[in-house]
Length: 69
Image 1 (cartoon, rainbow, N blue to C red):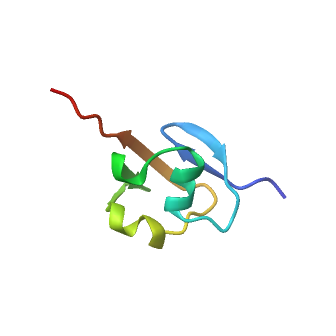
Image 2: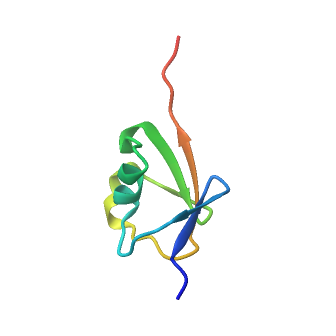
């Protein structure tokens, strides 16, 4: 059986199941409060990251928020 994957910003990444969106972001060394995430075309609020389970072949778009002046 092939390893489950997700596509994040166009790149296929292995996914260890079960895995929440919050766990995935932490595995990618991304701070949950510093990103905006779209999961399968739907925006996900940071307060919902721990409630969203990822599945094989999910598609993520992750944008890091950068403060500047």
